[in-house]
Amino acid sequence: MTINHKLDVFAGLPVVDSLELDDHGRREQVAWRIDMDDFEAPIEKFEAALDRVLERCGPAGPTALIIGEWGSAYETAFPIELLVDRAARLTGLRGLFVGEMSSEQCEISWINQGDYTPLLEAFPALEHLWVRGSEELQLSPIRHTSLRELVLQTGGLPATVIRSVGACDLPNLTRLELWLGVQNYGGDARADDLAPILSGRSLPALTRLGLRNAEIADEVATAVAAAPVVARIAELDLSLGVLSDAGAESLLAGQPLTHLKSLDLHHHFMTPEMAQRVVDELPGVAVDVSERQTEERWGRYTAVSE
Image (cartoon, rainbow, N blue to C red; front, side):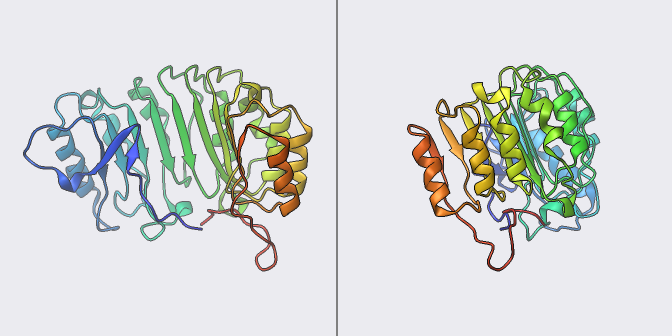
């Protein structure tokens, strides 16, 4: 599967394309999308588009930004410094999504990112951070008291990034979603790398946990089954991966999951009998076991990898 759709709502706000800028007043309470039509556009063109949005949104800037193609994303890292250098003009920024591209624009595993530590330091009021792509993605352990939502969508998430997330102090983070991906595209993590996250010590407010798109889905399910953080999770998402009967068996044999509001396992490799068993053993939980895959042709595969 590839990603071919774009968000209509982000950070609770309707998404508006920056090409729709007009002279009819400021529009702070939307999520502005900046997306270069030309995938080889010079970075100066992206910078000019960013500045046009800032000019129209007043002194505090937009409430939310979605950034698609910035120009040669397949070989040029996102220019994080352009946002950091404009922090004084972006004091109202609460939501940021960098890399919202379709597979036609750039395959997820080809999107070049960078070190997001300076960005989080420059925006202490940021509440929602989504990043797509993991090429050169970096993050150092940091304390950030405003962040409520962190989503890293990748075809292969490096273990170094996962360990850094686990070492961060994020006291108000309520949602964490990591797309672990496959080893061929940099997803070299094992369940042990998730241990600090699964302990929940640095994430006391977490209620929504997604460990998605995982080649090691069975291993993740086994770790989750004994994870202290799960006792206070309302929404657990292990979808898009290669979960089999073995992983589902471990999940059911672990700690009780009947307190969950939802358990998302869609895109899986469970047998119909096991999928039904998961549903039957968790009455009152909204369990999604749709999109069953088979190994007949391709073996087991994650939903999103390249």
